Image (cartoon, rainbow, N blue to C red):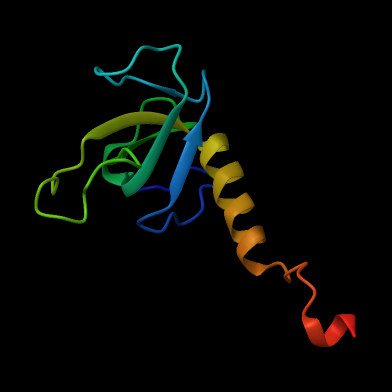
Length: 108
């Protein structure tokens, strides 16, 4: 299966915060909603006809998915690759940037 151009690896547990127009095809949400989804899987085996979108399954952040109460992903969205690239790049850069916090030793 061919990976869409520019699509990074998306670790399980990544939170995608998607705005209006960055996702579609979720039966339980109005199209005008912003959506947060905790990624379970990016489906490269089910690529959309448009190469700039991929299917993503996951959970709402408030879902108790780590418990036995919610083991099946509760959200399935068709997500724009550009939204995923932006989100993953932002999360990786914030994880890798040095802390701006000043320790007591540095202050005095």
